[in-house]
Amino acid sequence: MLYLGRRYRLKVQIDPTAKPVARMHGAFIEVTLPERDPAMVAAALMSWYRQRAREVFSQRLPVVAEPLRWVRELPSIRLQFMKLQWGSCSPSGRITLNPWLVRAPREAIDYVLLHEMCHLRHHNHSRAFYASLSRHMPDWKQIKTRLDSRAEEFLRIEVDRVG
Image 1 (cartoon, rainbow, N blue to C red):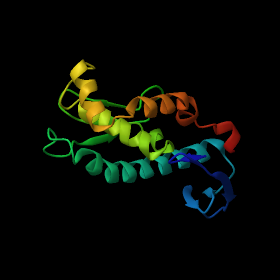
Image 2 (image 1 turned 90 degrees about the vertical axis):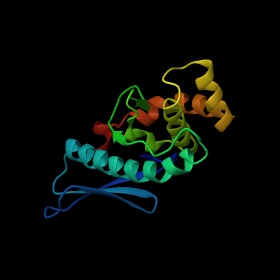
Image 3 (image 1 turned 120 degrees about the vertical axis):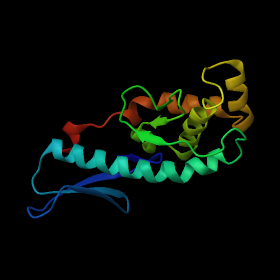
């Protein structure tokens, strides 16, 4: 299992009296379930990743937004599991982020947050958009390349291997 770019071993524990729950414990992500069920493991992990994503994104958003003159107030963020995208920005300024992004290193999370916040100023991928991105994160291309090269790994959860 991946979290913030690091690998953790998955440990599934069966406790007939337990509600499905996942938590980090040392080098493990532990899932406790009332019975061995791959779908239940996947659901507990998705819930855990969603909660971690909410926490990490809310911590990083103000840090990334702070130097951006065009950001007067932090945009609202919505989480949505997606198969092909890390994030998007609506014309109204609402940012949608993929909770699976929390599996990537912090620099990749910051890149995606900055990318979407640059869309608050430039609602396209124009030269001005990329100039803003480069001004605030000069190495964004390398970070994006590393993120894209591991996208398949970050965007999948192998349910059949977790049960």
